[in-house]
Length: 508
Image (cartoon, rainbow, N blue to C red):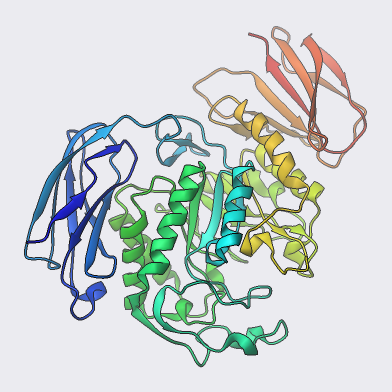
C-alpha cells in the first residue's frame, strides 16, 4: 500500500498538493487517469491530477474559502482510493486571490482589491540560463510590472536561434548550428531533424514552469501563460488534435491551482497555418471544463482580431493593427467588446530593425498614459540592441529603456484612482479626458491628458457647486504640482510641454 503525502494546512487561495505513487508501465501520460474531489462547507470541486515522473502522481487544488476540507483521490493510476482532510487558514496579507473582471471594463482581485494591470512581455525568460532567470526576477522585483506574458514552448525567431534549457517533450532537436538571421524562416514548423514524442512530457520542463509561476506569485505578478505560439522549429505548433488536447489538459492540471495564472490561448493565433477557429474554440472548451477556478482567458492576434465577444473570453488581449495608432483605439474597442481591454502589444521600446520593436521611451510612456486614461490597461516590451544579444522582450535580464521608471510613477497614479478605474469622457475632441468608471458611486474625479500636445493653459468648467483640488502632472518628468482649490469655471496654466496631465478631484 502506497502512502499519500499531502498538505495538512494551506491558506485561502493557496495551493494544496497531494503526492502518491502509482503505475508507470507503458505511457503514464496517456494510459492512466487520476482525479481528486475536494469538499468544503462552501464548495465542492473535482480536478484532474497528473503524472510527475518516477512513478509519482500529484493532485493540486486551490481552496476559495476558509475552514475544513476533505478530499478523495482515485483513478486507474492506482487500485487504492486516497482520502484525507486539511484546514484552510485566512489568506496572508499579500494574498488577494485570483484576478477577476470587475465592473465590465476593469479588474479586481477576488477579495475586492482593485487590480490595475501594468504588463510586460518576456516570451521565453524561463528557458534561459539560471543566471539570466535570476536577473529577470530581480528586475521584475524592482519594477511596476504586475503581469508578465511568457510561453511554455521555446521560441524560434530572429534573435531567438539558441536552444532552450529544456524541451516540453522527450526527444531530441534538430541541429540548430545551421541557423542564421538570414535563413531561420526556412526552418519554421517541424524542421527536419527533430525527433520528439508529443505524447511523453519532459516533466523537468514542466516542473520548472511550476516553479517560475510560484516565484512570480511571490512577487505579486500575474503569470499570463501563452499556451501556444507559431514561432516554432520543433513541431510543437503543428501537433495533432489529440496531442494538442493532451498538452492542454496536462498543463491545466499542473498550474491552474496557482492563483496568479491567466490563460493566453495563443500569441498571434492568426499566424498558425494549420489551426482553425474550430481548434481554438475546442481549446477554449477544454479550459472551461478543466480549469474549475475560472482564471482569466483570452487570445492574442497578429493582424486579425479574434471575436472577443465570444462568451469564453474574459478580456481583450490586443496587439495593435495600425502602424501608428494603438491606445487611441481604446474607446472603440470598449464599445465593441464590452470587456476589459488589455493592450498586450502596443510595440516595444527599442532600436532593432523591425517596426514593432523601435519606438522611444517617450512614445511608450505616452501610449501607456493614453490607454489608462481611456479606461484600458497597457503592456510593455523592450528590444534594445546589445553586444550580448539579450533582448528583454524574449530573454529577460536587465531593462535598458526609459519607460519602466515612468511606469512606477503611473502605478502610483493608478493606485490613487477610485475603484474600479477610469472611463473615457465623451465629446472631448482636443484632449483625452477620463472620469471614474463606476455608476454606483457619485465620485467627481477627472484626469485630462494632453499627450504630444503642448497647451500653455486650459480652461475647465465641470459644475458651479463643487470645489475641486487641481494638480498638474508631468508624466515624463514624474512631478505633481498642486495648483489650488477651484470652483465653477477656472483656468490652469501649463508649461507648454508635451506629456502633461491635469488631475481634478472633488474636495471632500
